[in-house]
Amino acid sequence: MANPTLQTTYEPPGSSSSPSSTFTLSFNLPDSRPPSPSSSLSSKSSQTTMSSYTTNSRPALARQSTAEVAERDYFHENPAPAALEEHTARAKAFIDIHAAAGRRVVLVTSGGTTVPLERQTVRFIDNFSAGTRGATSAEYFLEAGYAVIFLHRQFSLLPYSRHYSHTTNCFLDFLHESSDGSIVANEEYQEKMQKVLRQYNAAKKKNLLLTLPFTTINDYLFVLRSISQLMRTLGPSGLLYLAAAVSDFFVPPERMVEHKIQSTNATDLQKEENEAASKEEEEEVFDNFDSSPTVPRSKRLIVDLDPVPKFLKNLVDGWAPEGMIVSFKLETDPKILVHKAQYSLERYQHHLVIGNLLSTRKWEVVFVAPGQKDTWIRVPRSRRNRPVCGTENTVGASAAKLVKSL
Image 1: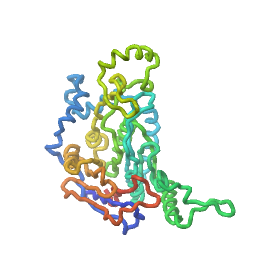
Image 2 (image 1 turned 90 degrees about the horizontal axis):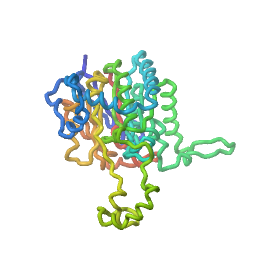
Image 3 (image 1 turned 135 degrees about the horizontal axis):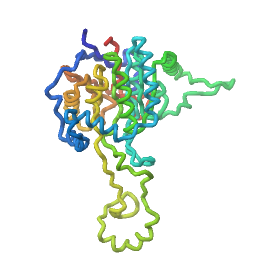
Image 4 (image 1 turned 120 degrees about the horizontal axis):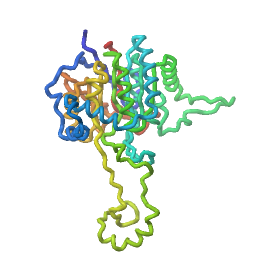
């Protein structure tokens, strides 16, 4: 069997998605993952991360790998999301339909995960991801004939609607009311709107797009594992395109408070006032953002986070061992980006890492694949204009599609 070919298209901001406005690269990927002596290596931090999940392991589990123990403990100690059963059932039905039709299926993950600080969540930690890359890439996969499961952050950008949502130009500015009272798109926008609408309706009519939302890191990990395991039956006809911005740290459930974290305890106000004078000298203080010149230690909110276990190894080796797997790497330091992408490939033994830097993510990416020369794709400065329907995080990274048979 010939090695699968990954053909990836890069759409710069402001492009019309026509052949002349994209760059295309092809990678001949290995049809199996060769064993690597470096695959067992892990950083000191990762060993520390996993050790917290193995401290209480019984001797009978000694033969289990660190990744297996981490998986068992995480999914045992954290509650499954309420929507897991429904998401799994919908994904299974979707996969079964397209597997029977001989169609390739891709799971695209998109958007950022949140880290709740309370069980009844008011406060949470988030990241800047709007889901642009994932939503854009999903459109390319659909164009290439894939059925797409789009696992996305709730309220993040979606395929097709991304052209008009989260926009700096209000969608209503694209429309006007005609003399007979009907709503009509302004002439200068009709061609693009018609194209997007036709693509959306075609995907909808053929049942090629399944959208499943998540919010928290816990939601994401449970649903990712469930769908990945369902895709195991697809073998090499399944692709996992992991573009979501996944949290690296979280608050374990046993340390999470039930109710909103209070900034002031009303029942202790009088006591605090009475003891304020004596405590003032004892408390360490620091400058704060409000009008108060100092804030005592007792008023600080100190958040103690645990590292999220890395489950890419579990995905590669157990959840979907024959699927093609693409991961992403975002860094801020250009000196370590390629090194960390290469390290990820060696450690997890998957097919491709797409790397980018925070400061240039809209304009350049690097493709790092086993046995391939690292390839940078850079959009010329003259083409770095933002489209009229764009967003602050508009298309500026890779939009991938697979066009060759696996």
